[in-house]
Length: 176
Image (tube, rainbow, N blue to C red; front, side, top):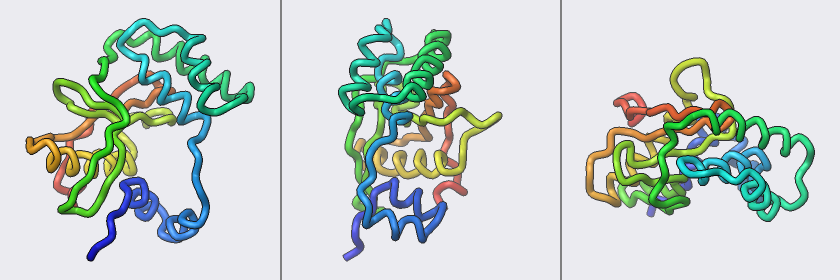
């Protein structure tokens, strides 16, 4: 029987197989930057109460550094200027594929296309998306297609520090 792998494990292995092996023995906690990006993202597409979001971040992370607060302030300022954010219908959705023996958690689901997006705490590249994000989108697309029984051509990548979402169409190269 083939063991199921988390999508994050697949991404880690694609970058550095040795790191995957070493990480298995060490519990990984969410970074403050990722918590900031996720909490801001959950409020996009609606009125954002900055202090309420910061309280949520503090509840999750505990006392935060000045660096985390500055990152938060920058992200809020940048994201607030984009009026095209969509409200999700569900978040942190567990997905899996029996066919590919993978599982993960999709950050956001939407009622219309693109039907999902992932949240990234890094700035967007000058064009396109990062290779590791292409792999994430391909894996989540495979899981969602199997679970929902519908064709999904790709997903969005929300680069919160840049205040933008980029669509990633899954190409044959990504499937390989």
